[in-house]
Structures are given as C-alpha cells and as structure tokens.
Length: 361
Ligand code: DAH
Image 1 (cartoon, protein in one colour):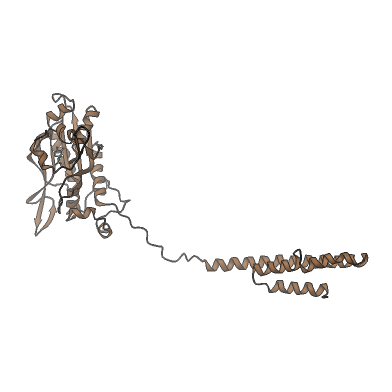
Image 2 (image 1 turned 90 degrees about the vertical axis):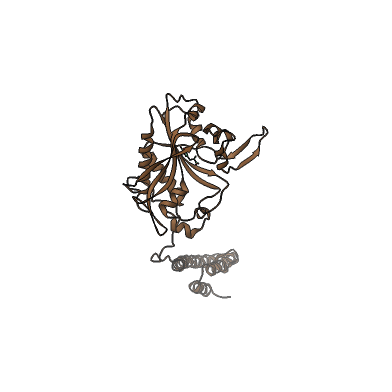
C-alpha cells in the first residue's frame, strides 16, 4: 500500500495540474469525499493500536488540512482565471461607433396640425373634437343644408347602412358639425379650432377618401367681419412665414355662413414652380364667413345677441403648399423614404416664437 506521504503528494500534484474547476472538484471527491482516498485511510485507523493510531491520525489530519488548503487556493486561482477569460471574451469596445438610432419622423400632417394649433392657441383658441361618424342632422341640417339642398350633392358623402328607424349616419364630410355640437353644449364666448378627419368619396392627386380639415369658430357679442379678416390674415402670414403675404377675401357661398368669403393668398407661378408671397397670382386656401343666423338659431342662440365667424381649411392642402408635396395620395403610402424626406424630427416642436418661417414654397 502507498504511504500517506506518497498519496498526499500525488494529490497535491494533481491539484497543481488541475486546469478547470470541474477537474479540481473531481480531485477533491477522489481525496476527501466519503469514499475518497484520505477518508478511507481515516476509516482504516480503527484497526490499529492506540499509540500508532494517534500518530497516524495526526499525520492524516495534517495531510487532509494541507489538501483542503491546496484545493481552496487552486479554486481561487481557477475562478479568477475563468473570470479573466470571460472578461476578455466579452470585452466591450466602447470605441466602436454606436448603432444608428431609429430615425423616426413626425408625419407632415401631424406637424401641420401642430403648427395650426400653435398659431390659434396663441390667439386664445381651444381645440375641440367631434365624432367621425355623424348624424345627418349635425353634418348637414343644423348647418343649414336641408335635404334636397344642392350642397349635399357636392359632398360625395359616404352613408352608413340605415338603423332600425331607417336613419343613415354618415362619415362626416367636413369638421363643421363640431361647430353645432360645441354651440349646443356651451354658452358664448366660444373660440375653438377643430382639427380632424373627414371623408368624401373622391380619389385623385388632390383628393383622398379620408383627409383632414381644421374648422374654426368664434362666437361672441359684437363679433364682426373685421375680426374674421384680422384673425385669418394673421394666421396665413404666420403659417406660411411671410410677413407681408397678401391675403384676399373673395365673396363666396356656404350655406352655414352669410356673408361667406373664400380666402386667397398671394403667389407667383414660374414654369410650374410655385412661390408663396407677394406676386401676380392667387391661391385659394380656406373658406370662411359670418355664422349664418339660422345656424345660431338651430343651436338655441339669439342672433340679435350673438354673432360670430367660422372658417374651414384642408390640412393636406396647406401642408402640400407649405412643404412642396406634389401628390396628396403619398401622405398615406407609409413609404419610409418619403417620411425621411418630408417628415420632421419629433423633438423639433413648432413654436411661433421661434418662427414657423422657412419651408414655404
Ligand atoms: N365646411 C366647408 C367645406 O368642407 C369649409 C368651410 C367653409 C367651413 C366656410 C367653415 C366656413 O366653417 O365658414 O368645404
């Protein structure tokens, strides 16, 4: 049988040679485990006489302690070697260029709506909303467009299937019904703008079945055409960023306003290129007028007491003009290349103090 010294030095050598924590654990079990070589020698002590047992016992305990200490030291060594290996394998090179950020853009329609809101908010307007699915009453009748009125035909309305009472709701053809809803629910003074989706059965380079409008309504005591003109001239000049932009009010007709005016802005056209600003041509950008007394009456207001003005504009149209977007249908194509070209960085919020100028075509 091998002497204790020989066994123990063999084990110590093996510990020294162990190249992994697993190998070291196998050595530990082989030496100090229940059936390990040292443990078995301990058990065999029972068979020898007392004096010899004492000596051999001491020697065995010493060997056992030495082996345990060697294992522990080697364990520390292997663990730190393993850590170093991991650290260098998983090294992070902070000098590498960062991954490109997701370059999200704000859609030009969202941006245009934000700009319109910012300008009117500065004049004390609040934003109001209404449903996309409207009753015939709010979309037409209350706005002085009774059944059989020719204006109904011009709207290319989408009708929903009739309900149990035979009534057909519509996808609102303009944001004007929100005028009625707001007047019904509030007392004057009223000063609202209503950005929102609108629908008409129409599809070409300048029309889409779903599009956006922004309505405006001001009701108060003694509101007159001068207020309408001042408000809309300010809006046009701020929105297009042209201080001396000529603005023209051209007589027109809308059932819900009397008198009515279409608003044109000055421009020049040069070989197909359009430039907004003082020039020899005009561009229609919105409809407006003094609220028809019949509409005020429909909402329970006394037209002798309250007057007001209203206006409505197409968001796509003013966005196309300001940002030089030639085809309205591209707004809804979800083409990322288009978005990178025409979109806006989300944190570049519009502020009229910073000036909304620039970008005018
Ligand atoms: N609702 C009209 C349209 O869709 C736009 C409009 C014109 C709204 C004149 C108004 C207004 O409030 O006064 O064509």
